[in-house]
Amino acid sequence: MRATPMSASQTELAVDEDASLVLAAQNDPTHFLALYDRWATRVYRYFLHRLGQVAAAEDLTSALFLSAYQALPRYRHRGHFPAWLFTIARNLLVEHYRKRQHEVPFELARHLTAASEPAADFDRDNEIQLLVGLVRRLPEAEQELIRLRYVAGLSFADMGVVVNKRPDAVKKSLYRLQARLQSLLEADHA
Image 1: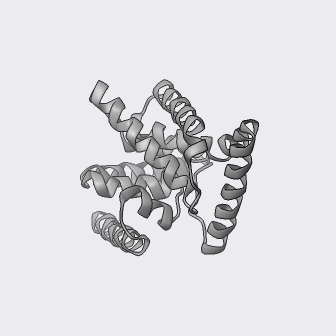
Image 2: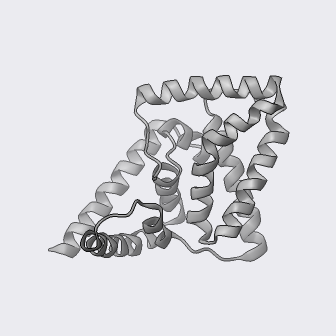
Image 3: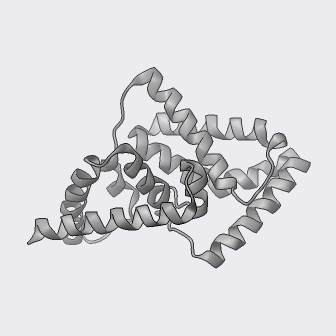
């Protein structure tokens, strides 16, 4: 199952649910499990996409939730809990890369999608390979926009907090990036 970006009304409901879960966990740490259940898969996929190693993704996911659990009493909910989590994730990745100096990026995207017919898989794999090649040539900041939106499934508001930009600027950047990638894909198929 791939993370799907949320609509505006879904985002509002998610913010309210996150606020309720955070408050409950701050009042009683046993409720932290609900936050973990809600976000663990998306955090794990983000790490797996960045690292390409299951064990490393699992380790960083555990480290992230340990850090979040320890910092939760100091957290002040302002509608951006996912941004807070993914800021911790990015910081953990920086530390991880400092120690290990490697990354296996976008090939894993096809392993995160649902299975389908073999012929469709072949066509999809060829399309993904082409797209992977195009994305690899993008600057890291643009690759991160793709990861945060389509691997982690964050809203534009949360993405803006993570990358320190206004949500409308993030949205505009991502849509321009998508249009540029689409035209490159179409040019390759012409």
